Amino acid sequence: MKTTLEVKDHSVSGESFRLEYDAKLHMYVTTPKPSKEKLPSYYASEDYISHTDGKRSLFEKMYQVVKGITLSRKQKLLTSYIPQKGALLDIGAGTGDFLEYVLKKGWNASGVEPSEKARALAIQKNVSVVEALPENSNGYNAITMWHVLEHVYDLEEQLRWLKKNLSREGALFVAVPNFESHDASMYNTDWAAYDVPRHLYHFSKKAIQLLFEEQQMRVVAIHPMKFDAFYVSLLSEKYKTRKMNYVKAFLCGWRSNQKARKTNNYSSLIYVIKHI
Image (cartoon, rainbow, N blue to C red; front, side, top):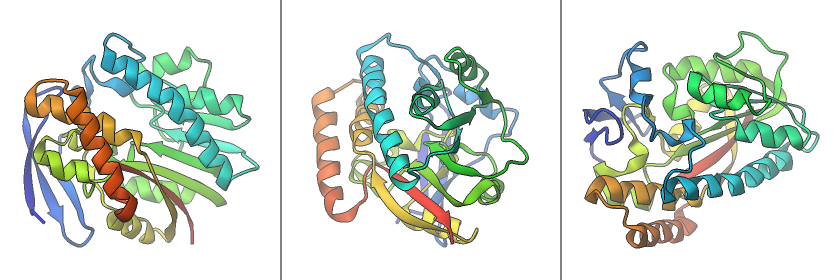
């Protein structure tokens, strides 16, 4: 295990950052950590795809198609753990597609999205989205964080908030990249899911388990996000070779998913977490 990795911000600044290994938690931390004031500038790009509904290129069109498929799968996953549905908070709601979908399925859903641009697009879809986490709640039946935990500025503070605001019988759904996946090892420092400095933390299965155990919460299930291996491999090809090599990316994504059938180290994983 390398204790330090040098990773470049390929999508916005071109700057390089270090990933420092935390042996206790088996995770990496992005260093230096940008200030709270500067961090939003690293999201200021038309290519930051989760903050746009764009379909300008083949890549963006593919992303929107896959997003539509995954919305259904995410909602079914939630309902399998919480069949009665109820109050749902989507943290990092982006442009509001997930909120719009689950509202139609009977959830009492609202969201949090710090990006003004993405929040404006979400509000146009008649969903409730605010800029910051509510200070107090009556307890959510479900809290979702789809590729968000790696972005939060104060990880410990976020975890404490989740413990406090998830109802005793509720479930938390956290999706994050997995640096132990095959595609991560193939692309090394060009692996797109490192996405520094927007991704401040880089998790393993062990890290997620230990971090939530510290909050008296436990991982009750882990589910794969198989599409992510292809999406991340395609972006990684672009970063490594400056070309969208669809064939090579598809093959790498396919191999990653095949190897993960034995290890469960998929490119991204969804953790279902409950109170102990």
